[in-house]
Image (cartoon, rainbow, N blue to C red; front, side):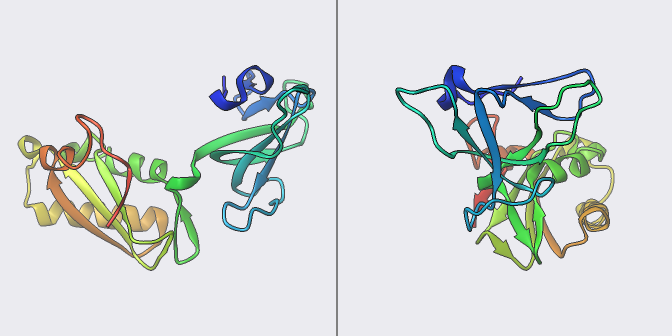
Length: 195
């Protein structure tokens, strides 16, 4: 189920048994994906910010309401038989950064960080100086009690794995998990932070 509070009962979406995206209820709301910077529509299949126009609320219609979610839209028929557009939520537009023109979202990094015993908690931050940067800067928290090799070895393993997956230049700062947690609200840190 996908629903954004601001759209209330006039727009929502559900996923079918095919698990190939959320089916938009296009008889009550029209969905589009737009470039978060230029605000122009992007072709179906490309990443853009989800915007919704309500079709049934005559008292307070929402026109191209920007949800803040990054999405891809697929208008081809679904294997379940429905023919409404489907969309996949990839993350928040405010969390997206571009490294050498490649879009990076926190969810891509999470799966790479949590596979290591020392960083199983997947505590990390993307340190952002601007929306577009030359180097991906990460703060990664590790569990001191699980550290079995020098910190430099963990940093190298993380660096090699993330570089192999994303193919962008990166710099990693390792911190004790407890130190990293102090940088945000209790037991939760913002995934993207300003330098």
